[in-house]
Length: 143
Picture 1 (cartoon, one colour):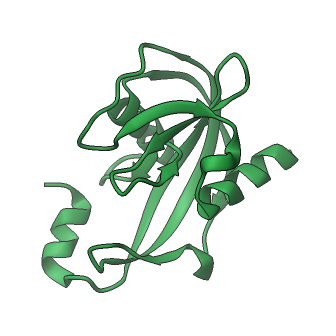
Picture 2 (cartoon, helix red, strand yellow):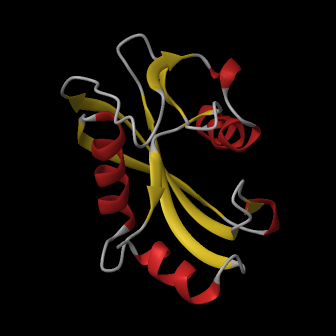
């Protein structure tokens, strides 16, 4: 059982403060890898930290779990936090997330979508992304 699942068993839908990481994965054409979530929205590969992990380990693990690719080089961009990163999920779980954003253009492996994590994987421009991820990318592009 994951840390978040254990906490949910104790607190129900009440607000949890969670840490996680997302990765902007670029291909040779500078397109961004997006995952179509189970709810149909598109977002960056990434997820929540498990106990004992660093943010970098979280980023690499989550990309591997969701896409089957291995990150060879990871570059830190920024930490996002605050009221604007408070969400109520479809199942009524409330979360306030602290998210470390990384980018990588050095990776290897074959893209394989984990159907328990998402519906599909594709490289895109930013048009199909949720507002949260567009904020992350605006920061990336401005650097």
